[in-house]
Amino acid sequence: MAGVVTGLAWTAVGGDILFIEVSLSKGKGKLTLTGNLGDVMKESAVIAMAYLKAHCKDLNIDQRVLDQWDVHIHVPEGATPKDGPSAGVTMLTALASAFTQRKVKENLAMTGEITLRGKVLPVGGIKEKILAAKRAGIKDIILSADNKKDILEIKKEYVKDLRFHYVSDMIEVINHALLKEKVKKAIDVSYKQNGEEKKKDKVEE
Image 1: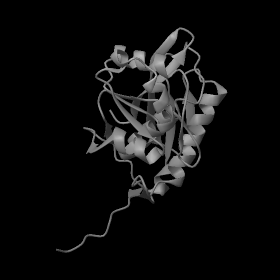
Image 2: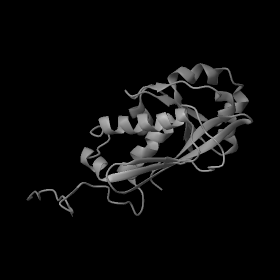
Image 3: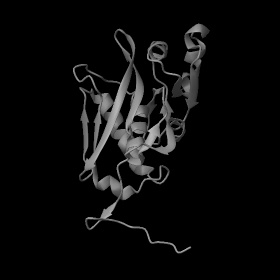
Image 4: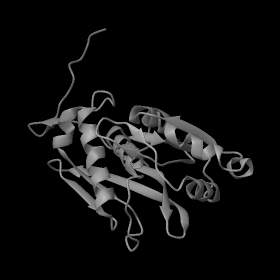
């Protein structure tokens, strides 16, 4: 399913996995956030959306579609309060997947804060998050390059069979996380003009 990405979170009782869901509906570019999110996490969503708008060309997204589709970001288990900046990379990846309808790599999780310029910043609770990933059957984990030192401090038996992808920029995250292939029953996220789908000029062979 496009727009659903697994993140890694830290809680008072240890690490946990976190699903970020993005759904699109015809509208006027409204952003809705649900799932009992704290202020910092809401800010991460706003930053992710701002980055997406500024880098549509890099993601092969027609910028005009952003004004014709409403975006709903939801984090399940709404009864559980959630906050912190570490879901930033997950939110942006889910947005990119939803707008491109590209598949998300299986058994992949990620954690990291993002900036408006798309830099991926380190976050805390790495050991706990890694243990949660192993319990969930995760095989690939995307982290900020600055978190590599935290992985090196973890005993090797805890990180056995895990593949770590260290990144500095959000484009690297998307390249790792999204497949070129689109999902089955992909929705047509395209720009429509005067109520009709804008058709490209046919090129005669």
